[in-house]
Amino acid sequence: MGLGTLFGFAMVGGLFIAAAAISWFIVKVILAVILLPFRLLLWLVALPLLLVKAVVLTIVGVVAGLLFAIGLVAAALGLVALIVPLLPIVLVVLLTVLIVRLMKRPATT
Image 1 (cartoon, one colour):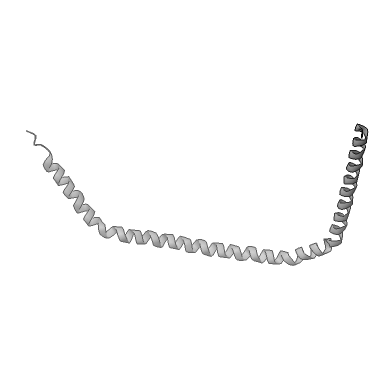
Image 2 (cartoon, helix red, strand yellow):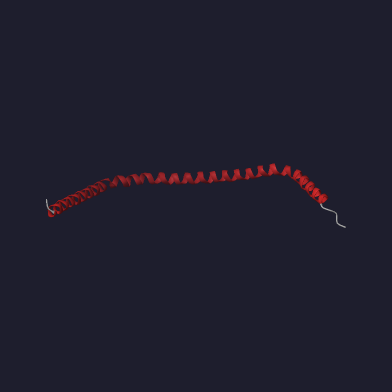
């Protein structure tokens, strides 16, 4: 079997693959044209549902955001409610530390 024969087989195989690809493309186009009215009808039915979904998700997002903001404010108020009663104790500790440091300082004359 010579080199020309191999090239001939390759040429015939390539032509066969090209013909198969063109045939498959034509079948896909015909199916797309046949199914186009059904796809358009599906979009016509689905579009209002998608709009309703968008509105509902927007409302849910706003409500969830408000609840999150209220939760943050409540957490901040709770933290302040925990810290404020401890402020007198912190003040006493700081004054005690200050007095102890002043007493440890050597006297100057």
